[in-house]
Length: 249
Ligand SMILES: NC(=O)c1ccc[n+]([C@@H]2O[C@H](COP(=O)([O-])OP(=O)(O)OC[C@H]3O[C@@H](n4cnc5c(N)ncnc54)[C@H](OP(=O)(O)O)[C@@H]3O)[C@@H](O)[C@H]2O)c1
Image 1 (spheres, rainbow, N blue to C red):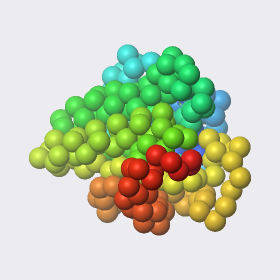
Image 2: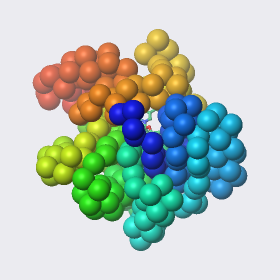
Image 3: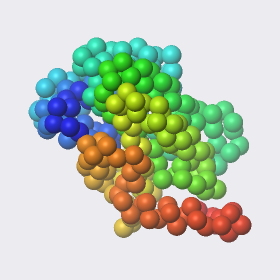
């Protein structure tokens, strides 16, 4: 974040990673506008951010799969903050892969949440940022988008769609002085992964939040979080397909 960046819009603000990121910005005295679907959590997060130093905080309650509300949500954020310096999209869900393989309805719901709802938001955000001719759009995708693993490809394909979209958007917004960051975390200990056994490769939401803020500040492009996931995913990407298709992970 540049020292003058003060207006931060967070979508999916009650995610564990988003909350920690919002706290960093609050400590810097930023103004924040939050969107999530749980009103009680939004209220307590708003209070928490004010106590930590945020100048002004407001929120909207929305299920982000209701795409037709996105233009209004972005408009409300831009109006409250009087422009946007940073927009960070964080919401997501980890599908039941096996159930989504058998039900297209379920797969579609998950792809809406992890893919199309993000693209819908980006479409609205791009217009605002183009008009402002400044700012940064950041999105949390996932290392899961780097390759379609048989255990997780519904989620992975939705995240890959967003990452590819972000690449194109980055080029389109460059002439308008708008930067686009793709943050790809590995394993993060959050409510989304509560049921998994944790190990040495796991990170805390606070750690990922620090990486997100720095990456936005430094105008990075694609960020593996933490960095060692860049090495792991390089190794995963170069496994020949005839072997990869046999690996059950
Ligand atoms: N945890 C990991 O290991 C990991 C790894 C790579 C990438 N990521 C990505 O990191 C991001 C943040 O996840 P997290 O780890 O912080 O998990 P989290 O705490 O479980 O956050 C997920 C958030 O998404 C929200 N959400 C899901 N569907 C929504 C919808 N239709 N409308 C509005 N909000 C919705 C949830 O809201 P409710 O609380 O109301 O359900 C929740 O706040 C996600 O994009 C996730 O895919 C996570």
